Length: 154
Image (cartoon, rainbow, N blue to C red; front, side, top):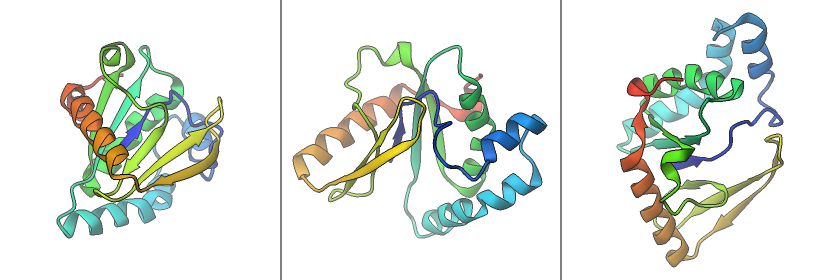
C-alpha cells in the first residue's frame, strides 16, 4: 500500500522525467523506457500474487505535477498496480497520516519525509505492530473513499 499526500514532488530527483513531460507535453517513449525498471518490478510483484495499491490525496484543481502523475499512472496500472485518487477536501473527515508511506506487510512501514518542494529528506522505517495496524486501517478507509484512476478526472 502506498499513500502519497503531496501536490508536488518536483524537488525529487526523477531523472528529468517531469521536466521532459513539461517540455514535450506528454509521456514519451523514452519516459516509458526509463520507467520500465519500476513497471517491471510491479509486474513481477503482482505476478507473485501481491496486491499493489496506491492512493494519491490531491488538492483540486490539481497542480501541473499531479497532471503529470495522472498521465503516468496508466503505466502503473498497465503493470498491475491499482491507483486511486482522493481530493483533499474529501479527506477532511479522515485520519490521514502526516507523511507519505509505504506499508509492505504487517511488519514494515516506511514513511517518506519531503521538503516543501517535494525533495526527499529521508525515509524512516517503522516496525511497531500497533503503528502498522493503525496506518493500515487508515489506508483502507482512504482507499474506500478514493476514486479509481479510470473514473477520476484532472
